[in-house]
Length: 83
Image (cartoon, rainbow, N blue to C red; front, side, top):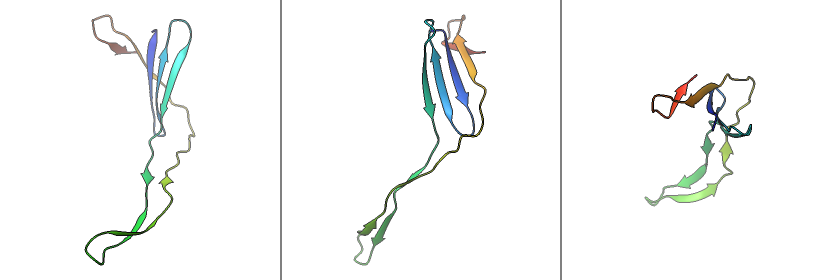
């Protein structure tokens, strides 16, 4: 492994692992919310599901590039250091 880059921004998070053979493994994490609407009745004291609706996911629009923070293997015995 050559380096680990951690990308952090308003719209997404990312991790890039760079290897010495000039390849990389990228992970992108998008913050989002899911909702699962359920319409229920409670007339008898217990929930009775009357209708389940289609789940809804928030959508993130990517509009800008973010500068990565690079983590290098640490020389002091730690795992990584910021560069």
